[in-house]
Length: 317
Image (cartoon, rainbow, N blue to C red; front, side, top):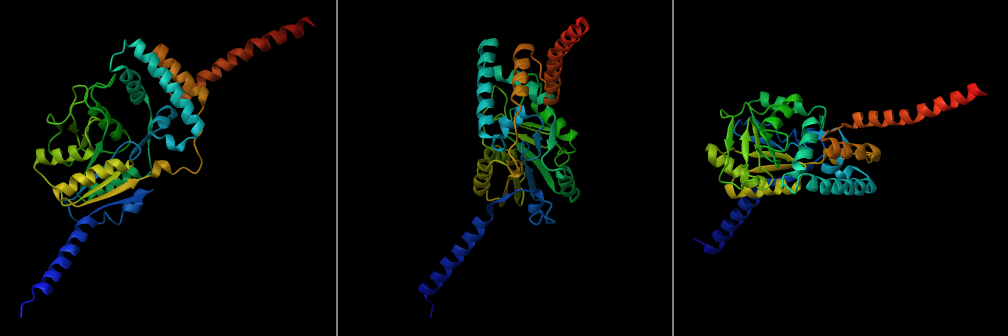
């Protein structure tokens, strides 16, 4: 005899198990090295999509003027406060210098970004990515940075692509199109989110999840699963939520390699003061090494006259 109670219970058990399996397809795992994700990526499915954030995930600035701004957690609290106060004073000076133009900050920050040297977060980062690409897996970058013209950088997409390529990373081979402008999304200073040679750029104002969804709609393609590496947990959650809405399985990796330093980094306060001074008064960016050299030259110029005076006195005696 058919029992509604029995089969109803079985139905709800199956529904519960199916629901659990669905939600397990949207997880975020904390990792400190790319190798910790290797077992997840040991798949032969060429319809998956692997996504990397860029700043603090692929690249990190060498000079501390940017590092303390973008990765303050690795510095002493007193240095963070000092750098922030210095930055605030500098920005106030730039507002006046550029007559309160809304792009005032772009002039100096873009010069630092363009002339700054970067390094891979892990020495094997580029090799890790190339090995995945050799399997035929599609890989792109997803970054929150501005698009279009930014201060002295003519096109942020081109600059970002060339910077990554300089360090052995190239995402331009996965799709046949070179550039897409998403003019249905929110613009930032008249520049819309853009896809350029494998790099999806949100333009700061749009959540990463929304931009990724729009990207899939425009190219009429959906991956079988997404693996996303980002140092920002909120960005991972944004993409996870968007993919849940799309029904695309998602595995996020909260990548904390740049937070994992054995000893807090030290800020050379004289160096960063000189860097901001040159930016404000000469519109010129000095790297940490260049600033140290100039400080040494200033020290030498103070010492040498004193030595000369001392020698003259000895001769007179």
